[in-house]
Length: 62
Image (cartoon, rainbow, N blue to C red):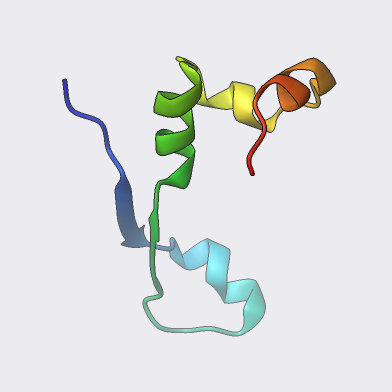
């Protein structure tokens, strides 16, 4: 089974125009969230962004 760990893309023009940027803007990142999902057995990435104190206490980062 494949899992995306790194993502990249170009920001849409309407996103960067309000900042006075008139050129393509690249973005990329490493998917640390995906590694956390594997470590903690989470199947829905949205669970990492909720305010569930029990989940946070159970799954210590350090």
